Amino acid sequence: MPRAFALRDSAIAAAALWIWTVERNLDRETFGGQLLAVTAGALAAIVGFLLHEWGHLAGALAAGATFHPPRHLLSPFLFHFDVKRSSRLAFLMMSLGGYLGTAVGVGLTAWLAPSDRLSGQIALVMAALGSLATLTLEVPVTLRVLRGGELPTGRVFAR
View: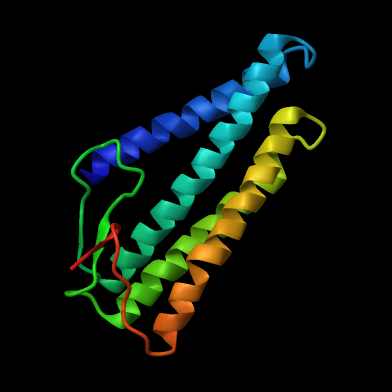
């Protein structure tokens, strides 16, 4: 299943780069140009999310965590972390991997996004919102576990 997700996510990233390239050559004032700009910006945000998820997977693998693949390829998540069979350190490593993936995504967006074009502006705003979501939703959980709290439960965690 990881190979299928790698192919899926590679195709999404390739489509994002292709649309971004086409969009740069279109007139900004046409409907088609604006539609592709919005699409390119949104796809950049999706690629950023995918980098975050692959970072989580890399952290889980590096820590030797137990995890389970999702049931279908349409899942936005690459795995379900098994909190019963994995250690606190494995959870923290998995979390750190996601943060590193986010940092890579934000860095690439800041470097590649043309700030003078709508597509780049959308990508930068979405990268900022994604980072804010990570800070709001994930960092408090990681800090709680780091301080000795219980491992979390929820739909991305298996018990």
